[in-house]
Image (cartoon, rainbow, N blue to C red):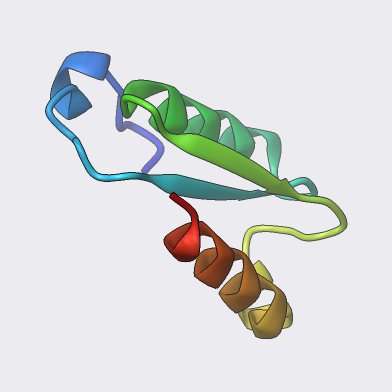
Length: 75
């Protein structure tokens, strides 16, 4: 993860709707990598979870599940 370089050409063929979740309290390197990943995927949406770190899916699974359900049900 630390050496990975996100290049748009690697993800240019992704056609599926993509949601990338980011914890606002995650370490700076993780926030940057998450942002780069979202920018490399055409049309990806990034959602920052205020008050959460990298493991929001473990600390507040109901919140994360709700966000994912909402994303999957949106047009």
